[in-house]
Image (cartoon, rainbow, N blue to C red; front, side, top):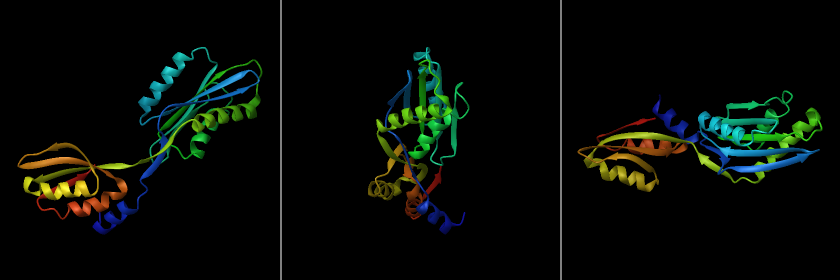
Length: 211
């Protein structure tokens, strides 16, 4: 990659996203039916499957367990499920609320207890939408950064230069090895990768990779 392009790219790339800080719940009632929404912060599909399994087991007597989720800061990985409700009446309204709040790394499961009166497609859309919105109203929405890992290999004599960069830019370290030849990993906000790479490139006897 052209060095100038590389640095300019990492200085301008979008590196934040929004999610919820912790689990939250919402509730909507209509004509005897009860819609209970459960929202969870997640980072993998395995976590999503675990939450779904817990909800289905705990609320085994509910008529439907509808859900939607979105993962990743690119906002392109998502799914919705109507779980037996008319097509598009449950999962999509839940997903619509996730999108309207510009959230990702989140799953919402809405449990429905049927009250004996059919609500129609329009009523169901409103119910699942409102229950999900209530869960988000009760949640703390937080901003997160997209981070990259820089793996460093350097001579011990370069330690002071490396630690100065770490301290000046408040970087997180992990897996440090302090020997004649040192190594460590730096957790760097994606928008700062170009800047930090430029500084590291000036340190003698140091090489690094971006993971």
